[in-house]
Image (cartoon, rainbow, N blue to C red; front, side):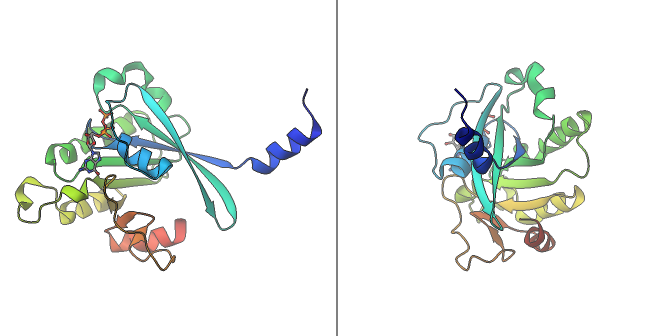
Length: 202
Ligand SMILES: Nc1nc2c(ncn2[C@@H]2O[C@H](COP(=O)(O)OP(=O)(O)OP(=O)(O)O)[C@@H](O)[C@H]2O)c(=O)[nH]1
């Protein structure tokens, strides 16, 4: 039986939900990143996503509880198929993920941008470029990796905020607790202009 108490308590616990779409080539680490964001740890094993997996993270921003609903989508075409149109419905933000040690996954971003265009994703929807696996970055082998300069230029050209991170070994959190100082949670902001924008939006 539905009681008044249940109604009031569900009203009190309800919070605004934001749908965040996570896209990128297969193997770039979408599952591991969303797992890190929701559970705070690197999963002990990750299998190829089929269709979509959902994870959640509740944040408190300026005293208000906000729920991020992370849509971890399959990078492999054969596991996406007819579901794609559902991914793009009522999206609040998109994370474009690539692997910093895999230039092909960076080049592949153009087809993910094209997919967004085909599904009429509005230009007003915030887009974030995320270079994952920074723990594997080898500074002596810049040719076989995606440099931060290259990614910064790409992000600027496509109106995205750019972060580099590692689901496995994330950069240390900002200790001062203030925003816009180069890090947002365990994501490291690379673009200075974006840094200012982040200070005003999160
Ligand atoms: N070293 C390192 N390995 C990572 C990191 N993130 C993911 N991996 C590894 O990369 C592989 C692929 O990770 P997934 O999270 O399954 O990749 P995905 O993008 O979800 O792949 P699909 O589901 O096929 O689209 C796994 O072996 C992970 O352990 C990271 O930050 N650092």
